[in-house]
Length: 339
Ligand code: 5HM
Image 1: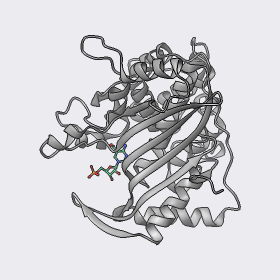
Image 2: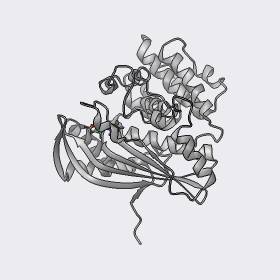
Image 3: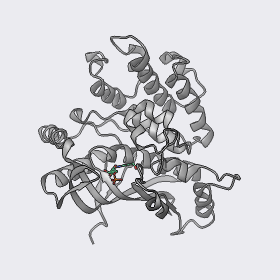
Image 4: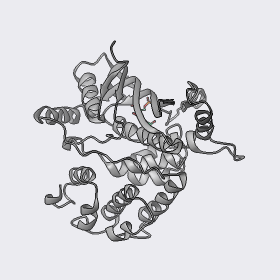
């Protein structure tokens, strides 16, 4: 009996197959809201190890600073533009009021409590899964029909919803996206959504299960086709993908941990503080979350300090996979021997 979806161990394999398909054998050429794109309709794949959520392809120049920032922003239930535009200034264009993000503030939809302190959708689903583990009702809708009522909506949620299923002691997740830009949005979406899955698994005391991703409109914008081709050329020349196993989220991670990481993040984002690797190592935070702060300190140096190289202690303290990624993203600011 065939598996329900094409299965990959890491996000990189899925990313490469999807861009190859949409670029090389598109079903349609579309032009929605001025974005010409090559499109395939209705794709699904499964990641057996959702922790392997980073691609190691030099030509892609993936940005782990943005990916951690976005995942933490979601987990904290935030929607403010000021945090996210620091890491990606392009996000301002999606904000309807210059203060908050709209439909794409998925974490606000999922994790924020109601105005009168009512439980968040996440808290309600946690209660359901604790009381009826075999439930099929653990669905967290994100896209709202009301979004169609907003005239000239600059930010309509691309994530339709996340479905949580507890089976055999593991938390599986199925993600439904109405649309996914395979070159730009896809990698940070899978990174963040699998972080959300792992965070929820930790809250429930469960193993991390598999992650299934389904897309209505899977597309590559014409303006990104040249980069996509470079990515595919690099992948074709490599014997096999680089392996930097991504560690497990600590089992004592709570919403309070996320708040604590983001308090430090804010100090670095606003350049109120600067940290050495030793400062970060002495914080009351698990090494896993210290990695996020090392990335934010690295980004602080790039944004605010008049430096030739990012300080070597920060580079040396990074997980080898993150060091590889920042070395290729900011190759002019990370000493060559460290890449
Ligand atoms: O016209 P439309 O609202 O579909 O344009 C949004 C574009 O951003 C699409 O290309 C969509 O696939 C991409 N996108 C994404 O891939 C947007 C968001 C933010 O909601 C996202 N992933 N998370």
